[in-house]
Image 1: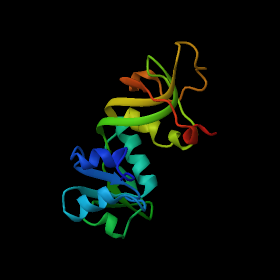
Image 2 (image 1 turned 60 degrees about the horizontal axis):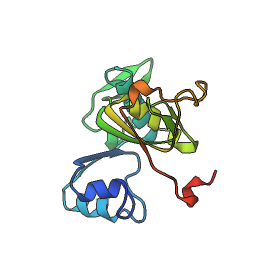
Image 3 (image 1 turned 30 degrees about the vertical axis):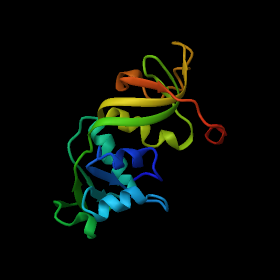
Image 4 (image 1 turned 90 degrees about the vertical axis):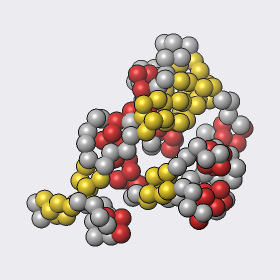
Length: 174
């Protein structure tokens, strides 16, 4: 839910975020989130990371709710419909669709085709699919045709805006 006073924490501080859905809500310096949560000014939904990815992916694929065994019998499943299928218990989880997705990619072209590095590839591609509008921050905007189609993870049809932001030396390291 953000670090210090920058990135997501900056959005939280301005009141632009009313709900956080995440698998791990805080780090050592996420004091902005902590203050808002304790004051009841922001809603928090904790979701196991695999469920989070599946729920986002379901929305991006145009699917409805999904059943997952993760969380069954815990507080996370409280009040949610369940199903026993083939001898195993499942919890119903709704897709997660967003108005806006703010994602970070390594390179992109002006059409929004994106290439990622490392863990940015975890949620960026599926979140782009699950949002009405995707804004991608990229380290470099390249000319059309320069990206190898075999390396494009997010096709431009899912991206409405590409914003070039040069990496700092610490974040530019491989």
